[in-house]
Image (cartoon, rainbow, N blue to C red; front, side, top):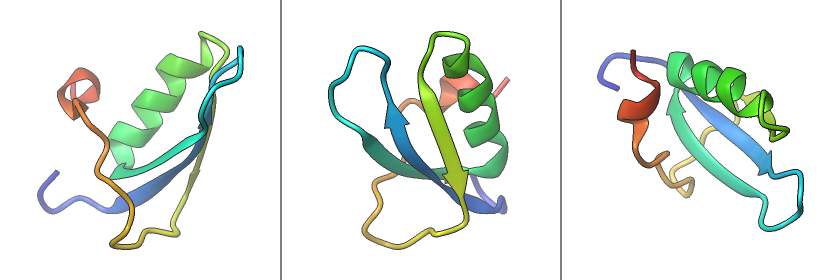
Length: 65
């Protein structure tokens, strides 16, 4: 994620309930994540409200290619 714009993956909500989680990651990864998870009924919201308290999205290599 070097030299890439960071974004806030906000309110990652799963269709059957459960936790809504927030992460930060590179813009391109966030959009690939959203495209993939939306097909499975997960609501993904992305914004530019990035702050140091947001954890980094784990396993980003899944959405890098």
